[in-house]
Image (cartoon, rainbow, N blue to C red; front, side, top):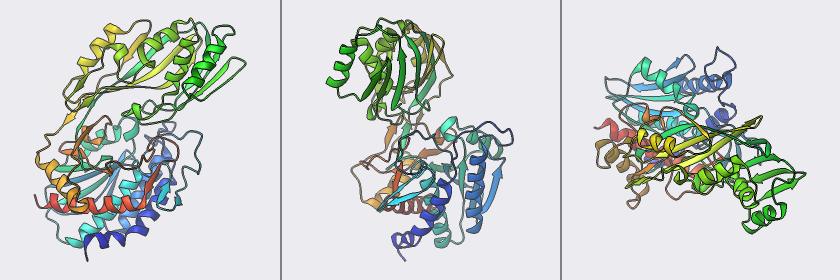
Length: 446
């Protein structure tokens, strides 16, 4: 039977397994010391390992940090590295985010595309490879982590316990492959406000916030100018008794230009409404006008892409407003190239920067890239799209000999990975699975 037809026989299994995994609200929770990332994450991991046991895989739970399922024999190890944790949900979902809901070709649910859907595709791919190659000359290990969205401590734990892989991919990026991942710098800023008494926005630093609320002192801004600015620029807002709500559009922090940052829009309006406030002035000059870091003198670019900056979470205590900073910088640069000018150019606020994460880069003609791209081309026939670099950080940065490979297709409809109404398309899940089968067969033959 052709691999495409063989994959089709796993359609119901993939959907059923995704239904199971999506039902676990596996958002980071550190309230119980027994579970490093929360009981829901641990339960989701156990459910995934139980499914793999049913398929005859060897399984191991690494103290609820992560787990793996393995087929084959031999010293060399191929890794498929996915994650079961998800970003938080916000208001506005049309369906229950933790109940997989089918609408035609689409499956709605948190994690359906990032990354529980690709994990279910990988489970099916391993079964098919095992069926096609009963006597494997290498081991293939599906590694499933529980902390990718909030620090990847799960993968650090795995590498400490089990080591690296000889060849690997994480189905948590884009086809036809990601040969470079931008470096990352994160941190916070804190600034005083004299006119904002309460400000709240965002649910995670790696999400463009789609809503912000502010309470303002009376007569601290020109109401007519504010409303005219929002109306003229098609910005959705509500203003009542000096309580301002501004709406935007969420996106992944690695591509902030694809979203609409509600905080940026709110501050643009207040600045044009003659709101004289140190926070408004600082934010307007530093962040509100672009997503490229120009306000801090870090709008760098190289041959593979430009720097991006996202303000994701805003909280206020007293007159102190603190915001999270998420920067993805070009693959040929180093974190110090970013942090030094930031500290020099920041005026009007205090910066607290975390240690940067350096970029990942593979030559486009390297063996791993060429092998995986060949698998993609064999299934899709697409020779136009080439491997990319991206701003998203994946497990590939934490384990050797690994790149992000799938599950998003070039020019595919946005699956709202970190936004409301996240979905996966059934036909794309099946195509992913077929590509992964071919990729694993090719890696076995190296």
